[in-house]
Image: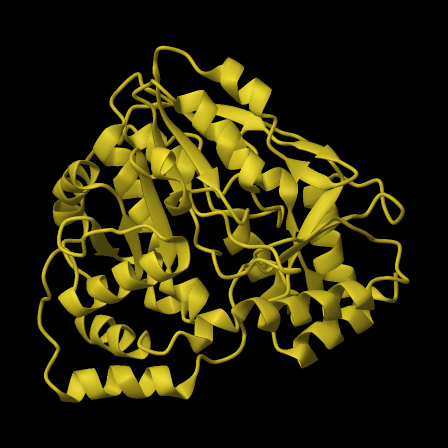
Length: 385
Protein backbone atom coordinates (compact mmCIF):
# COMPACT_ATOMS: atom_id res chain seq x y z
CA UNK A 1 0.00 0.00 0.00
CA UNK A 2 1.51 3.31 -1.08
CA UNK A 3 1.61 6.36 1.14
CA UNK A 4 0.14 9.54 -0.36
CA UNK A 5 2.70 12.25 -1.09
CA UNK A 6 2.05 15.44 0.80
CA UNK A 7 3.43 18.53 -0.92
CA UNK A 8 4.28 20.80 1.98
CA UNK A 9 3.03 24.37 2.09
CA UNK A 10 6.08 25.36 4.15
CA UNK A 11 9.11 23.58 2.70
CA UNK A 12 11.63 25.79 4.51
CA UNK A 13 10.09 25.32 7.96
CA UNK A 14 11.38 22.81 10.49
CA UNK A 15 11.51 22.60 14.26
CA UNK A 16 11.94 26.05 15.76
CA UNK A 17 15.19 27.07 17.41
CA UNK A 18 13.22 27.71 20.61
CA UNK A 19 12.12 24.08 20.82
CA UNK A 20 15.63 22.85 20.00
CA UNK A 21 17.35 25.03 22.60
CA UNK A 22 14.76 24.31 25.30
CA UNK A 23 15.19 20.58 24.72
CA UNK A 24 18.97 20.95 24.88
CA UNK A 25 18.68 22.98 28.09
CA UNK A 26 16.53 20.27 29.67
CA UNK A 27 18.92 17.55 28.56
CA UNK A 28 21.95 19.28 30.11
CA UNK A 29 20.33 20.81 33.18
CA UNK A 30 20.97 24.33 31.91
CA UNK A 31 19.33 27.51 33.10
CA UNK A 32 16.96 28.28 30.25
CA UNK A 33 17.33 31.94 29.30
CA UNK A 34 16.47 31.07 25.72
CA UNK A 35 12.72 30.83 25.19
CA UNK A 36 10.83 33.97 26.19
CA UNK A 37 8.56 33.05 29.05
CA UNK A 38 8.59 33.89 32.78
CA UNK A 39 9.46 31.22 35.34
CA UNK A 40 7.39 32.99 38.01
CA UNK A 41 3.65 32.99 38.69
CA UNK A 42 1.08 35.60 37.77
CA UNK A 43 -0.66 37.63 40.45
CA UNK A 44 -2.99 35.42 42.56
CA UNK A 45 -5.74 38.02 42.14
CA UNK A 46 -5.90 37.26 38.41
CA UNK A 47 -6.45 33.58 39.15
CA UNK A 48 -9.20 34.55 41.60
CA UNK A 49 -10.97 36.53 38.87
CA UNK A 50 -10.80 33.59 36.45
CA UNK A 51 -11.95 31.15 39.13
CA UNK A 52 -14.90 33.39 39.92
CA UNK A 53 -15.82 33.54 36.23
CA UNK A 54 -15.76 29.74 35.97
CA UNK A 55 -17.92 29.35 39.07
CA UNK A 56 -20.33 31.97 37.76
CA UNK A 57 -20.99 29.71 34.77
CA UNK A 58 -18.97 31.46 32.06
CA UNK A 59 -17.86 28.17 30.51
CA UNK A 60 -19.53 28.01 27.08
CA UNK A 61 -18.66 29.58 23.75
CA UNK A 62 -18.33 33.36 23.92
CA UNK A 63 -19.01 35.75 21.06
CA UNK A 64 -16.67 35.17 18.13
CA UNK A 65 -15.27 38.69 18.52
CA UNK A 66 -14.63 38.34 22.25
CA UNK A 67 -16.47 38.92 25.51
CA UNK A 68 -17.97 42.45 25.33
CA UNK A 69 -16.67 43.41 28.78
CA UNK A 70 -13.11 42.54 27.77
CA UNK A 71 -13.32 44.36 24.44
CA UNK A 72 -14.63 47.37 26.32
CA UNK A 73 -11.76 47.21 28.80
CA UNK A 74 -9.24 46.98 25.95
CA UNK A 75 -10.74 49.97 24.15
CA UNK A 76 -10.72 52.00 27.37
CA UNK A 77 -7.10 51.12 28.05
CA UNK A 78 -5.97 52.10 24.53
CA UNK A 79 -7.77 55.42 24.80
CA UNK A 80 -6.34 56.13 28.26
CA UNK A 81 -2.76 55.35 27.27
CA UNK A 82 -2.51 56.34 23.63
CA UNK A 83 -5.37 58.80 23.09
CA UNK A 84 -6.92 56.66 20.35
CA UNK A 85 -10.61 55.80 20.38
CA UNK A 86 -11.53 52.35 19.05
CA UNK A 87 -15.12 51.12 19.00
CA UNK A 88 -15.25 48.03 21.20
CA UNK A 89 -18.00 46.46 19.09
CA UNK A 90 -16.47 46.86 15.63
CA UNK A 91 -12.75 47.58 16.07
CA UNK A 92 -11.48 45.22 18.81
CA UNK A 93 -11.20 41.43 18.53
CA UNK A 94 -9.90 39.03 21.18
CA UNK A 95 -7.59 36.35 19.76
CA UNK A 96 -6.03 33.04 20.73
CA UNK A 97 -2.71 34.67 21.51
CA UNK A 98 -0.74 37.22 19.56
CA UNK A 99 0.59 34.68 17.04
CA UNK A 100 -2.96 33.87 15.93
CA UNK A 101 -3.62 37.59 15.68
CA UNK A 102 -0.54 38.14 13.52
CA UNK A 103 -1.29 35.18 11.26
CA UNK A 104 -4.95 36.13 10.85
CA UNK A 105 -4.06 39.73 10.00
CA UNK A 106 -1.67 38.54 7.30
CA UNK A 107 -4.11 35.99 5.88
CA UNK A 108 -6.94 38.52 5.67
CA UNK A 109 -5.10 41.11 3.61
CA UNK A 110 -2.19 39.48 1.74
CA UNK A 111 -3.03 37.96 -1.65
CA UNK A 112 -0.85 35.70 -3.81
CA UNK A 113 2.04 37.72 -5.22
CA UNK A 114 1.70 40.59 -2.72
CA UNK A 115 4.94 41.72 -1.11
CA UNK A 116 5.30 42.10 2.64
CA UNK A 117 8.26 44.00 4.07
CA UNK A 118 9.61 42.28 7.19
CA UNK A 119 12.23 44.04 9.31
CA UNK A 120 14.89 41.56 10.43
CA UNK A 121 15.88 40.06 12.77
CA UNK A 122 12.22 39.14 13.16
CA UNK A 123 9.88 36.96 15.21
CA UNK A 124 9.75 33.66 13.37
CA UNK A 125 5.99 33.44 12.74
CA UNK A 126 5.82 36.30 10.24
CA UNK A 127 7.40 34.65 7.19
CA UNK A 128 5.47 31.33 7.38
CA UNK A 129 2.16 33.22 7.65
CA UNK A 130 3.09 35.30 4.60
CA UNK A 131 3.96 32.12 2.71
CA UNK A 132 0.62 30.50 3.64
CA UNK A 133 -1.14 33.58 2.23
CA UNK A 134 0.82 33.24 -1.02
CA UNK A 135 2.68 36.46 -0.35
CA UNK A 136 6.34 37.26 -0.85
CA UNK A 137 8.37 38.24 2.22
CA UNK A 138 10.78 41.09 1.53
CA UNK A 139 13.37 41.03 4.32
CA UNK A 140 14.99 44.29 5.37
CA UNK A 141 17.92 44.01 7.78
CA UNK A 142 18.19 46.44 10.68
CA UNK A 143 21.49 48.28 10.96
CA UNK A 144 23.67 47.67 13.99
CA UNK A 145 25.79 50.48 15.37
CA UNK A 146 27.18 51.72 18.66
CA UNK A 147 23.67 52.67 19.78
CA UNK A 148 22.34 49.22 18.99
CA UNK A 149 19.84 48.18 16.33
CA UNK A 150 17.82 50.65 14.27
CA UNK A 151 15.62 50.62 11.19
CA UNK A 152 17.19 52.09 8.02
CA UNK A 153 14.13 53.96 6.82
CA UNK A 154 15.77 55.10 3.59
CA UNK A 155 16.38 51.48 2.61
CA UNK A 156 12.86 50.53 3.66
CA UNK A 157 11.45 53.26 1.43
CA UNK A 158 13.57 51.93 -1.44
CA UNK A 159 12.16 48.43 -0.86
CA UNK A 160 8.60 49.58 -1.52
CA UNK A 161 7.22 48.56 -4.91
CA UNK A 162 3.76 48.67 -6.54
CA UNK A 163 3.27 45.14 -5.14
CA UNK A 164 3.94 46.12 -1.51
CA UNK A 165 0.80 45.29 0.45
CA UNK A 166 1.95 45.25 4.06
CA UNK A 167 4.80 46.40 6.31
CA UNK A 168 5.35 44.47 9.54
CA UNK A 169 6.83 46.39 12.45
CA UNK A 170 7.58 45.24 15.99
CA UNK A 171 8.14 47.61 18.89
CA UNK A 172 9.48 46.97 21.48
CA UNK A 173 11.47 44.64 19.30
CA UNK A 174 12.09 40.92 19.68
CA UNK A 175 14.91 39.85 19.63
CA UNK A 176 17.00 43.03 19.77
CA UNK A 177 15.36 44.88 22.67
CA UNK A 178 15.29 48.08 20.60
CA UNK A 179 12.27 50.41 20.50
CA UNK A 180 10.90 52.70 17.82
CA UNK A 181 10.91 56.40 18.73
CA UNK A 182 8.72 59.25 17.52
CA UNK A 183 11.06 60.07 14.57
CA UNK A 184 10.77 56.43 13.46
CA UNK A 185 6.99 56.64 13.42
CA UNK A 186 7.12 59.86 11.42
CA UNK A 187 9.49 58.24 8.94
CA UNK A 188 7.09 55.32 8.54
CA UNK A 189 4.20 57.71 7.99
CA UNK A 190 6.17 59.50 5.27
CA UNK A 191 6.73 56.18 3.47
CA UNK A 192 3.11 54.99 3.42
CA UNK A 193 1.40 58.35 2.93
CA UNK A 194 -0.75 58.39 -0.20
CA UNK A 195 -0.44 54.62 -0.72
CA UNK A 196 -2.64 51.58 -0.08
CA UNK A 197 0.05 49.93 2.06
CA UNK A 198 -1.18 48.45 5.34
CA UNK A 199 0.77 48.11 8.59
CA UNK A 200 0.87 45.19 10.99
CA UNK A 201 2.22 46.50 14.30
CA UNK A 202 3.34 43.80 16.75
CA UNK A 203 3.24 45.53 20.15
CA UNK A 204 3.13 42.57 22.52
CA UNK A 205 5.86 44.09 24.73
CA UNK A 206 4.10 47.47 24.91
CA UNK A 207 4.46 47.71 28.70
CA UNK A 208 8.15 46.88 28.75
CA UNK A 209 9.85 50.16 27.81
CA UNK A 210 12.60 51.44 30.10
CA UNK A 211 14.53 54.45 31.34
CA UNK A 212 11.50 56.73 31.31
CA UNK A 213 10.75 56.36 27.60
CA UNK A 214 7.19 55.93 26.37
CA UNK A 215 5.91 53.24 24.07
CA UNK A 216 5.32 54.74 20.63
CA UNK A 217 2.25 52.74 19.70
CA UNK A 218 0.91 53.09 16.18
CA UNK A 219 -2.32 54.01 17.97
CA UNK A 220 -0.77 57.38 18.90
CA UNK A 221 -0.50 58.37 15.23
CA UNK A 222 -3.89 58.71 13.48
CA UNK A 223 -2.29 58.70 10.04
CA UNK A 224 -0.77 55.29 10.81
CA UNK A 225 -3.61 53.91 12.92
CA UNK A 226 -6.09 54.29 10.05
CA UNK A 227 -4.17 51.65 8.05
CA UNK A 228 -2.93 49.41 10.88
CA UNK A 229 -3.65 46.17 12.66
CA UNK A 230 -2.27 46.64 16.20
CA UNK A 231 -1.53 43.45 18.13
CA UNK A 232 -0.92 42.94 21.85
CA UNK A 233 -0.77 40.04 24.32
CA UNK A 234 -2.22 39.43 27.76
CA UNK A 235 0.23 36.55 28.09
CA UNK A 236 3.19 38.93 27.99
CA UNK A 237 1.56 41.65 30.09
CA UNK A 238 0.27 39.44 32.91
CA UNK A 239 2.90 36.64 32.95
CA UNK A 240 0.50 34.00 31.57
CA UNK A 241 1.98 33.07 28.22
CA UNK A 242 0.33 29.63 28.36
CA UNK A 243 -3.15 31.16 28.34
CA UNK A 244 -2.66 32.26 24.72
CA UNK A 245 -4.96 35.30 24.78
CA UNK A 246 -4.22 38.45 22.81
CA UNK A 247 -6.12 41.06 20.87
CA UNK A 248 -6.16 43.20 17.74
CA UNK A 249 -7.29 46.80 17.31
CA UNK A 250 -7.98 48.08 13.79
CA UNK A 251 -10.37 50.42 11.95
CA UNK A 252 -13.78 48.87 11.32
CA UNK A 253 -13.15 48.18 7.62
CA UNK A 254 -9.94 46.28 8.32
CA UNK A 255 -11.44 44.54 11.32
CA UNK A 256 -14.36 43.25 9.26
CA UNK A 257 -11.90 41.45 7.00
CA UNK A 258 -9.87 40.24 9.98
CA UNK A 259 -12.96 38.68 11.55
CA UNK A 260 -13.83 36.79 8.36
CA UNK A 261 -10.61 34.80 8.78
CA UNK A 262 -10.68 34.67 12.58
CA UNK A 263 -14.13 33.05 12.70
CA UNK A 264 -12.96 30.10 10.59
CA UNK A 265 -9.51 29.93 12.16
CA UNK A 266 -10.17 29.62 15.90
CA UNK A 267 -13.70 31.12 16.04
CA UNK A 268 -13.56 32.06 19.71
CA UNK A 269 -11.26 32.27 22.72
CA UNK A 270 -11.29 30.81 26.26
CA UNK A 271 -14.44 32.21 27.92
CA UNK A 272 -13.73 32.28 31.68
CA UNK A 273 -10.27 33.71 31.15
CA UNK A 274 -11.76 36.54 29.08
CA UNK A 275 -14.21 37.37 31.87
CA UNK A 276 -11.42 37.13 34.44
CA UNK A 277 -9.16 39.44 32.46
CA UNK A 278 -11.96 41.95 31.94
CA UNK A 279 -12.57 42.35 35.66
CA UNK A 280 -8.85 42.24 36.51
CA UNK A 281 -8.17 45.10 34.08
CA UNK A 282 -10.26 47.45 36.23
CA UNK A 283 -7.02 48.03 38.16
CA UNK A 284 -4.29 49.36 35.82
CA UNK A 285 -1.53 49.00 38.43
CA UNK A 286 -0.25 45.58 37.24
CA UNK A 287 0.71 46.87 33.80
CA UNK A 288 1.63 50.38 34.93
CA UNK A 289 4.19 48.83 37.29
CA UNK A 290 5.60 46.52 34.62
CA UNK A 291 8.34 48.86 33.26
CA UNK A 292 9.94 49.25 36.70
CA UNK A 293 9.51 45.53 37.45
CA UNK A 294 11.34 44.40 34.33
CA UNK A 295 13.87 47.24 34.29
CA UNK A 296 15.11 46.04 37.66
CA UNK A 297 15.55 42.53 36.27
CA UNK A 298 17.29 43.93 33.19
CA UNK A 299 19.68 45.90 35.35
CA UNK A 300 20.36 42.91 37.60
CA UNK A 301 21.32 40.86 34.57
CA UNK A 302 23.37 43.58 32.89
CA UNK A 303 25.21 44.48 36.10
CA UNK A 304 26.00 40.82 36.69
CA UNK A 305 27.79 40.60 33.33
CA UNK A 306 29.73 43.85 33.59
CA UNK A 307 32.94 42.07 34.47
CA UNK A 308 32.49 39.35 31.86
CA UNK A 309 33.77 39.13 28.30
CA UNK A 310 30.25 39.59 26.95
CA UNK A 311 29.48 43.01 25.47
CA UNK A 312 25.95 44.14 26.29
CA UNK A 313 23.91 45.79 23.55
CA UNK A 314 21.31 48.41 24.50
CA UNK A 315 18.11 46.87 25.87
CA UNK A 316 15.49 49.63 25.79
CA UNK A 317 12.45 47.36 25.79
CA UNK A 318 11.07 43.77 25.91
CA UNK A 319 12.50 41.26 28.37
CA UNK A 320 15.45 40.30 26.17
CA UNK A 321 19.11 41.20 26.38
CA UNK A 322 21.41 40.73 23.38
CA UNK A 323 25.14 40.27 23.91
CA UNK A 324 28.22 40.02 21.72
CA UNK A 325 30.52 37.12 22.54
CA UNK A 326 33.44 37.76 20.16
CA UNK A 327 35.88 38.05 23.10
CA UNK A 328 34.86 34.55 24.22
CA UNK A 329 34.59 32.48 21.07
CA UNK A 330 34.82 32.53 17.28
CA UNK A 331 32.11 29.90 16.90
CA UNK A 332 29.08 30.67 14.73
CA UNK A 333 26.06 31.78 16.78
CA UNK A 334 24.17 28.49 16.68
CA UNK A 335 27.24 26.49 17.68
CA UNK A 336 28.12 28.95 20.42
CA UNK A 337 24.59 28.82 21.86
CA UNK A 338 24.75 25.03 21.93
CA UNK A 339 28.22 25.08 23.51
CA UNK A 340 27.03 27.58 26.11
CA UNK A 341 24.12 25.28 26.96
CA UNK A 342 26.18 22.09 27.17
CA UNK A 343 29.33 23.39 28.85
CA UNK A 344 28.29 26.48 30.84
CA UNK A 345 24.74 25.25 31.55
CA UNK A 346 23.02 28.45 30.40
CA UNK A 347 20.78 28.44 27.32
CA UNK A 348 20.51 31.40 24.95
CA UNK A 349 19.14 31.90 21.44
CA UNK A 350 21.35 32.75 18.45
CA UNK A 351 20.15 36.00 16.86
CA UNK A 352 21.00 34.54 13.44
CA UNK A 353 17.90 32.34 13.87
CA UNK A 354 15.74 35.43 13.44
CA UNK A 355 16.91 36.09 9.85
CA UNK A 356 15.53 34.53 6.68
CA UNK A 357 19.03 34.18 5.26
CA UNK A 358 22.13 33.25 7.23
CA UNK A 359 23.61 36.32 8.89
CA UNK A 360 26.30 36.00 11.54
CA UNK A 361 26.92 38.89 13.94
CA UNK A 362 28.36 37.05 16.93
CA UNK A 363 25.33 37.87 19.08
CA UNK A 364 23.05 35.76 21.30
CA UNK A 365 19.82 36.69 23.06
CA UNK A 366 19.11 36.07 26.75
CA UNK A 367 15.67 36.30 28.38
CA UNK A 368 15.62 38.03 31.78
CA UNK A 369 11.92 37.38 32.54
CA UNK A 370 13.00 35.06 35.34
CA UNK A 371 13.05 34.90 39.12
CA UNK A 372 15.99 36.76 40.64
CA UNK A 373 17.42 33.46 41.90
CA UNK A 374 17.25 32.04 38.37
CA UNK A 375 19.10 35.06 37.00
CA UNK A 376 21.73 34.89 39.76
CA UNK A 377 22.33 31.19 39.08
CA UNK A 378 22.79 31.95 35.38
CA UNK A 379 25.10 34.86 36.16
CA UNK A 380 27.18 32.69 38.49
CA UNK A 381 27.66 30.16 35.69
CA UNK A 382 28.33 32.78 33.02
CA UNK A 383 30.96 34.41 35.24
CA UNK A 384 33.10 31.33 34.76
CA UNK A 385 33.80 32.56 31.25
